[in-house]
Image (cartoon, rainbow, N blue to C red; front, side, top):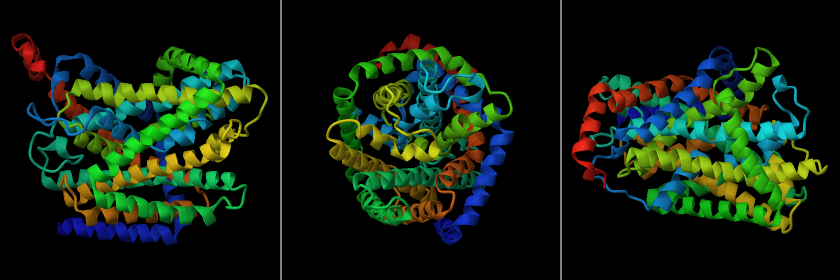
Length: 502
């Protein structure tokens, strides 16, 4: 525990330094992120594809019957709550931020090497495929591998930590893994919290007709209110805090999606759903393996696809451990279906509704003004401006983003406290401490001149060592699952005792 306190003090000092020197902090982070993207771009592209192949193997090979927590473990949460908690923790406010924005941006500015006319039907087709590539199977497979690696070691004694799969290593080595993961979780969470704060700030300015100015005048007070809310949730604990808010999140998200589907361009949305599935399937192999030519096209890939994948990797210690924690009593096969394929289908539907509606409006000649990263914060609000009950639905969107941010920060503080205290049931004080650290670092990113660029760079920088840790976790889990002795045992067991699966 003394070592945990020393680490907490060190991180607190670092957070205060970042808060008081946001420009220096931002510049250093962006330099580190850009250097990694330049040198390890191919590695970053192929890692998520390997994670997806791993999850498919778990789904179809005999050892998918392995139960997280051991054969006697029982599920702790109802299936609906379980899936809701995974979805809220894994994607959160990013879906609301990018639901309308990303398809619009890719249609307005297709990848440079494709030589496609902006806002054309072909640009729309590619935009739908690229958006799904960034948000569905590959992203959730990254989380899936991290969770499976930790979950397979869940039946033993000891705290639930990213180093759990490496039980044979000395304690100092495992502690180094957990500290590395802790820093990555901090950076990844700050990136997402900062992005959400920017979106809420834009929403408040929109809904108030400019009476609430966009910028730090609104962003910092909102961050303080957000911090208070997620600290209260963190204090309440897993069942009274995160679980309840996750169900509220799903209800609000479904309400928003149904509203846009019913009162929006329903026919265009249905068309976008079909086209998204077809375009994603048709472009799947090329997107998964092809790294664009060096120059402007490669820079586009680094700024979009690779940054996204590193963002997901930065969240793996948090999401992976959290998913393993709430999936006790579920088989690996059930987990892969619920944690990779169900969220991917939900993501496909979400982007078809919000993205499809926005694309339909844009192609009718009404320019929504969303063309790059800086304008993305307004996308959901300008889409709703085209529909009835504008102010009410814009207010509900702000509420949805806010609750997503609360659940993400609450879950993150819980996991960070687990890492520090080396226990699966961290103290309320530890959860509150890490909630305050998250708030300080998010404020530093917001106050820096680079704003959203700084938040994106933080996610990339945090993910750098974790790309190699994720590969090692997958290797250890793969050997346990698919090694010669393990696979032979699973086949024999399935033949001799088929009733065990029931």
